[in-house]
Image: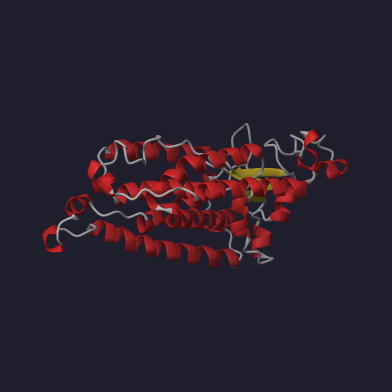
Length: 339
């Protein structure tokens, strides 16, 4: 999935929230899906997806603006990393590959335009960076990986549930990822939409669980999603990848799915055309109501506690001595410096 990029302020190292998640099976969320029952698919409203394409356009446009501001040729004489890459692009040319191997701007440009950084969020009270970092990318490779993932995952969700619910999950998951990232990562800056993308994956999983009765091949759908999620989270333990943004986004999206993506149970859908007195069963199951209530409580509590800890200057690593391994596992080939 999308991997969030981190950047070390001391050595121009960027960690990327940018690796794109492997796309789910192409027919997972279509009405012809083998995971979907014929009765439920016939009653679903098919929305026209426009929000996801607009998000893609906005991210591309933002990247162009970042590169214009970066203006590598103007500043290359001040740097020792080498010549700008793609000099024929003029001020849109990329930083030297030694500085940014993803074909993108400098870390100082990203920081200036809204990258996530603990000191600026906590000490300078620039809370807007929790949102702005979602729209920044460290390079062309980072941008393409995240946008391809968004297209594969987001369009199907928007067609099934509409722009309002998918947009809410995307933004709140991105903010959730930013909060957790800032609590645990203090030495690097972070950019990328992967927290929001992991939120969409989390919402897909909770949607499957809460709407269990309307799916046909439940085990196949569940196993497929879990494997995709685990692979992407495993990639996050590599250096320069902000896995805390992935985890925070996933948890927020998982809870939001129980709240926003609830469907009527299968037995009710079979009878919904009958008079009310003849329908018999409730529209939603008791488990759906329980999941909804618990998820709302956990969401509100999670965001409230996270924000309070963040603006009080708390370091998440002080409360969890092993949590830094969730974002980077040191080996003989690389070291980690994310705390």
